[in-house]
Length: 157
Image 1 (cartoon, one colour):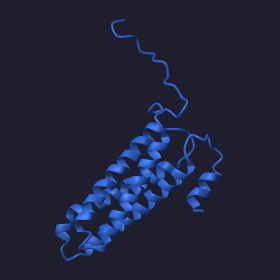
Image 2 (image 1 turned 30 degrees about the horizontal axis):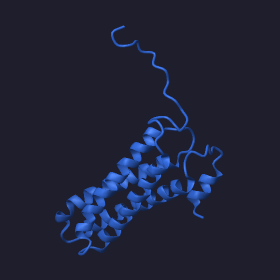
Image 3 (image 1 turned 135 degrees about the vertical axis):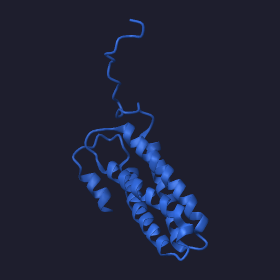
Image 4 (image 1 turned 90 degrees about the vertical axis):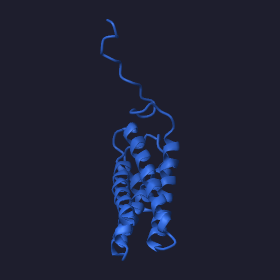
């Protein structure tokens, strides 16, 4: 059992609305992908053809930052903010897909890009699985929560 899962299991707030196995897998995939993308960007900088790697370096660094932020947001279990979780997971999926596509173009020539693309695809999949596990509750509210009553006057009133 990883420390991620152990910490999730030790958290006093468990309302049972999120599959902790999928949550732990997504956190681990995000943190691993953040490290891998940062390392790939660094390796790209060491390549003789560094100018040709500019876009790859940019997508690596963007993906690393987004994955790190997603891992941090997913780690927080106190309170609920489903809309932010969904948006962050979607952003992470997009960043990972973009980075994987870019690195796959260089995978035959650069081993670090092949490794990075694999990590990005794993993270993209883990985020997709967690999104699916979140269900279709109302955006911005945890499962079972309802929208607050509007205090604004009705149009034309």
